[in-house]
Image (cartoon, rainbow, N blue to C red; front, side):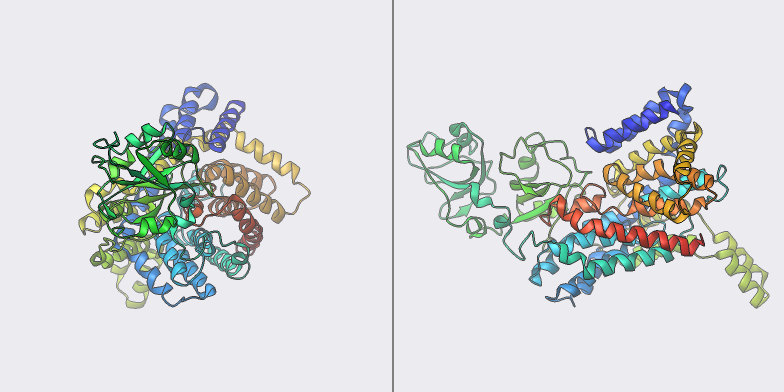
Length: 622
């Protein structure tokens, strides 16, 4: 128990500090448990059991199915149509945002739902004269409410179900979740959370990003933008634009090359300089002073930064924003090390990280998950960025490439995946047999399938019907989530097998001996919610479910109710941008600060902790 406890502490420290990616931490935990087998009891076969776990495979399949739905453009199309009635009224815009994100997230994984709706919601806000900051956090939170409507709304639900099933032998009250196991409770939570956002939550949100303001102005690019004219006789003539940076002796980034009356070249990094060229550069005061000291160069600040970008020729290289998700190859790298400019024929004009615009040189800055890049590139590159899973666009491309003709196929496949799990086929067959006298209807019982089977069958159907190409399957999966699940599942096995979970549960029970069961249930919800803010939501489920089940048994309560409380708490994280990936997606586009999440999320977390616990008490009869 001591050894497993030390592994848990080490894992939590690494999860919190993010010194290494969370999926790498999870694999390190798995390796540590195997190497310490004499003390942890985790054999190599048990250590790698997370890779063959039904939860891991089901999540993998559901991510692919969600990608198929996204590829058809169904969510975006529904979002635009429902949002069309919103106009310039904030209450209608909020209602449209919540009404699309919530129900969609019940059947399609909520992370891709938010990713595809960010451009839609941003456009709704700008067209209605509303700050996007008023809608993007509600978008993220509503997707989390919606994720609790069914078993497949989040990967956390699936993992919690599998964990509960694995503990059934030790705690007879536990079992895997049915597809609509907690739908009634999820509806209550969804309605309570939505009411809060519609009445109180949006009033607590500041307007960080002004409505429809040019993006260049939003990022304050004018503060470090300058024009450098190359005079006749300059020794820079015939050299590449990067030579200007060498001349400055300080960091200078070439944004655009202007030639022959504001006609722009295809790329700011290629070609050779000519006399009369004007370079639009991103530089600090010291670098500009060095350039201005050269007689063959003329340096001045443009009067209007936005005009400098949106002038004639800007259609060839428009400016867009993209968010860097945790799965992007850019995370932990720099623009220079990834050759971003040459790879995409694009220039990063500005970067917003953790709510603040970065003013220092960008080429050697380490990119973090959640950073928002202001990118200038040709339309073909913007389409490529929009389709790539490496980036989340803040605004839709002019002509998004959706497979709208495959919408009926995708809907039918998802209906089949859900139907074969959710419908009570045995009872239905018996009822029809009794009504008609045809015993053949009892064969309907054979249609009942596990979500693992139907989800994998749905993946095959997606490819066979052309909703997804075969080569898109691997790109559809968030592999960090898969490795995270595979790595932390053995930790739950070790907690249970060594008796560590039972010991912690007994300690909680002893401390709460004089407290009502409902209060202990609420405390588990709160502790799980706080833990989720600092480590992965999937990791918090693995750690807390065995302890909650043991504590419930020790005080004579229903362990299944405690598992539900832990599951709901881990799947709804509102206190900060890093507790849940959807919160991170909207961080940059909304211009938020950490305090914004705390201001809106803390009352919501308190409200839902009460609503959820009272709902469990009512539905489970505690």
